[in-house]
Length: 303
Image (cartoon, rainbow, N blue to C red; front, side):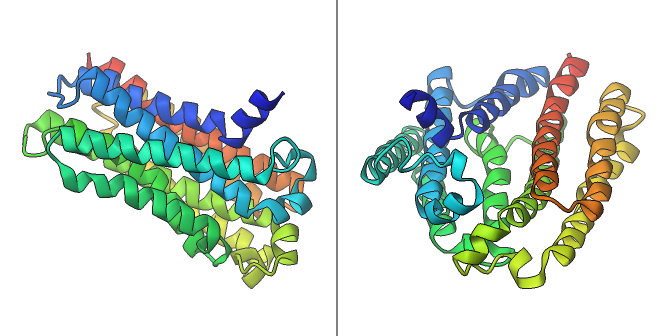
């Protein structure tokens, strides 16, 4: 029972998605375009563990700071205090966070790129500051956590690719990853606003100042729906630019990302209940997963 609770605490499904994405990038996308890699398999696993541990620590500290709000918003899903003592959860955070940073610093030093250590230290600090302070700020917290999601996609490029290589294939791959990062940032930004609307009761009782509390649910819904225009525009740009070169992936993007995202944008305007927003939040997570899967289709098409 406690193992299941711990896995829920660290959001194991989200961590699996990170692992899946990084494996797709290194062993599918990079291989399909025959890019030269800097990381050995052991170094790649070290990077992956560092990312996973720091992300897990971010989820843990977020649940610690969100305890009072979660008791109101989702009392049946509270893990801290229901399954573990607060002190035990704090120890989980210290262990996972420290180990993640140490692995990241060790990898950076082994690659003779000591300045890359600040990526792991900075990510850890931003996750802590987000949970403690930024989360209660309108839009700033949403942007901060969305930036971290997007940056996690770019991280492998920094470590694994020789950025001085100007080959067309590598430039195309980097361009693809940057577009995916932008897509992830925008989708996650919309989802964070939707989650704030969903959690408005608990946040209001704790005198937090999230976007729905500042502007109201109706205006926040419109903002979230409007923000969907940007990832939709990005998808339309990709469709227009690569329709003649990658027909299958363009068809996939149209059916499994663009159409569902358009549905979410429209549904947001009519959503009313907590259940409605919870469904839309889950739908946005699925769209993110489907967007990541486009890398697999692109890789298969490139072999």
